Image 1 (tube, rainbow, N blue to C red):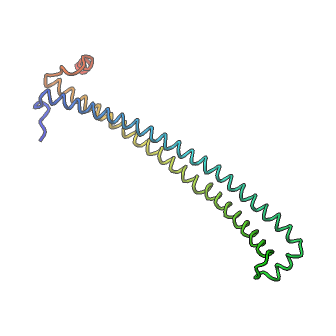
Image 2: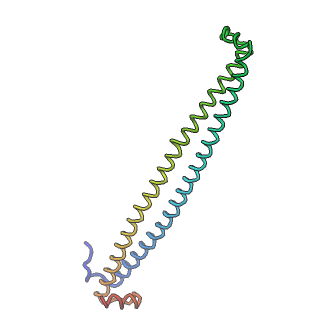
Image 3: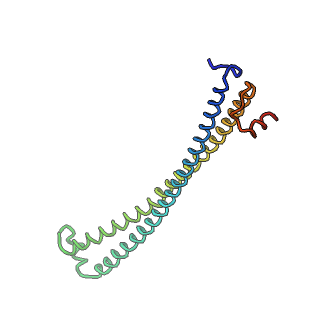
Length: 184
């Protein structure tokens, strides 16, 4: 069982006062660290969004260029006599068939890069935005809890100081604080 207010020695009051000050100082330091970490995290997430946005643009452009390349050579070969031969002998591994397989592969690559660009824009970037918003929201909640905790610590410190004054030993308090407490 804890001693009542009047049963505590001035030394105990001093220790409690110092402990509360130390806890408050640690809380303030942790709050600063959390704020710095949150700022760095949000900046990193913003950089990642910018990176993937640019990468999506590059993938889209690459996809278009591949499609144009495949279409240009497809149009060129459709007009040749070998195209009719290709239609007849699709199962043979002739140079013309290999050429058509290569062009179809380029078209598939073009679609794959377009899909990759779409994934970057609609999934990856959006997820980074959500994480950034969540980090900011959590920081704000922790900050408000920290402010309330500091208020509670201030009240505890004030109660400890009052208790010590009532016990008769207030020599460890700064004179300004003693004067303020006596005026209460």
